[in-house]
Length: 225
Image (cartoon, rainbow, N blue to C red; front, side):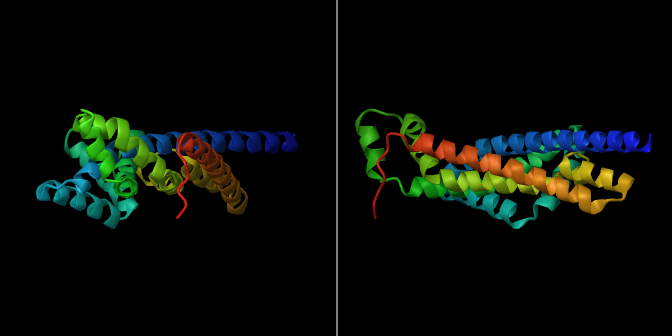
C-alpha cells in the first residue's frame, strides 16, 4: 500500500514539474516575442541620425542592460498596479522579460544592420522604394539573417533567466520544484530533475534555432573573408 502511495506521489510530482515546464516555455516565448517587437524600433533609434532619437535608444539600452533582470521584474510587478493595471503575474513576468531582452536584441539587430552595405539603401531609393519599404523588404530580412545566431543565443539566455519569474508569483518550473522540495524534503532529486528539463528545453530551442538559421541562409551566398 505504501509503495502504491509513493508511486502516486512521484507521478503527481512529475506531472507538476511538466506543467511548470510548460509555464516556463510559455512565459519565455511571450517575453522573447515582445522583446523582438520592441527591439526593432529601439534598433532604429540607435541607428538614427537624429541626436535626440539616438540618445533615446542609448538610454533604453543602457538602462535595461545595466539593471539586473530580477530588479526589473520586481519594478514591473509593483509599478503596473500603481498605474491601475492589475495584470496577472504571468503577464507582468512576460513584460519584464520582454523589455529586458529588447535591449540586447536591439544591439544584436544593430550589428546585423551595420554589416549591410550602405549602397543597398541607395539602390532601393533609386528603384522607388520608400524608407519604410526599404527597411521592411530589404534591410530587416538581411539584418535578421546576419544577427540570427546572436538572437537565438539571447532567446536561450532568456529561457534560462526565466527561472527568476518565480519571485513575482509565476508557477514556473523553478517555483514548482521549490514547492515539491518543501513537501518531499528531497532537494537533490527534484532540482536535478528540473535541471534535466531545462537542458532538454534549451537543446530543443538550439536545434530549432539552427534550423531557422539554415532556412534564413537559403538563397544567400556565403561571404569568404
